[in-house]
Length: 418
Ligand code: EPU
Image 1 (tube, rainbow, N blue to C red):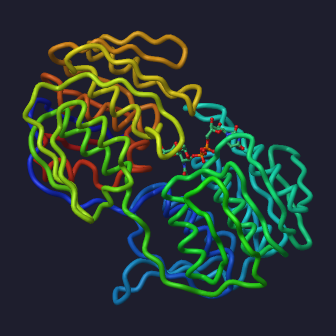
Image 2 (cartoon, rainbow, N blue to C red):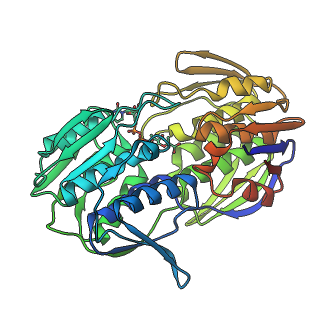
Image 3 (spheres, rainbow, N blue to C red):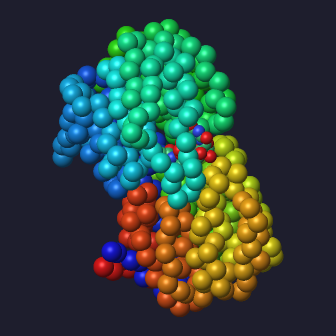
């Protein structure tokens, strides 16, 4: 199993490019199921979750090709002969549930392994199922599989009980081929939903309101092929900004979108960073004493749960005491135990962590428990005195493209070993 070795204590300096967004690319790949024409997708990040999604789509009958002359990959779902998402694939990536809506809309049937609980929480999919049932799908759950059929999905009004990102995406993709108009209320407003909607619109869908909490979709009889480029990854961007705020230094991030990171940038400025943005770049300088920053995660546009773990690491050496409350997932503080192995002073009460800043962390042997927890440990390793070894970095490879190369380009002493 591979590990990361980090010698901490170096400030970050330099510039790198941000990759395409994992959480936008995954639903956009599934959008290829909605048409028998080709969908050419650019700015796809090279990640394990993307490989898993491509393998899943491929075993359903979707052809995946890449051509040196055309950027990105081309997906063609002309033939869909196996609308099944088997347990072996779904268990490694919960986003596999995103094939359910498109399959029902396009071929009227799907058999998807029920995603179980995962490290960060229970993560049920009841809202996806309830919405599809409201559109007329017949759904039963047997032997761990969601079995769904629909003659023709019907547009309707659906109010989500809770804000769900993939739930909103699944129903939006189901609704683009439904008969009549679907209105999604209490929809998630994440930028990745706007990106998916823009891709669907390029394919001929009629969608209004993506990015607000009410999305209206007028079903079409078919969608056509298109070319689309995935948005930059706002969480990767935020992770590098947080790393540099914690280590000190000066970095420039290119090919990103600074306007999707308002809540994160506000907190970094509160921590002492100086940030300048232009249309696709962010420049960050950190040369002040790091201040502790309290935060509470909530759906977009509030502070993202996917940045909570990284800020936990930053706060370990901040001046003062910070309070971090996780409100989205019930078990997303697992990095705390690992940070404590590095001498962090953190107390957990329910879903709240109280972090008392100390002058420095000590390098240690730690274990990654999920994707963003891994990023938190990388930041902790960069600021710690001495060497940190991070185990189970396959979690990191699910969502960060070339992270150790990018950090090395910024001057970090980090290497991957077998
Ligand atoms: N929930 C339900 N029922 C449902 C759906 C969700 O109770 O039917 C609950 C979840 O258990 C959770 C809350 O609602 O407590 C919000 O979950 P949501 O459905 O919004 O999460 P998700 O769509 O499964 C996406 C991202 C996550 C990100 C969350 C929140 C993708 C592929 N994943 O997950 O990304 O944390 O939204 O923003 O888009 C990551 O990249 O590390 C990651 C976990």
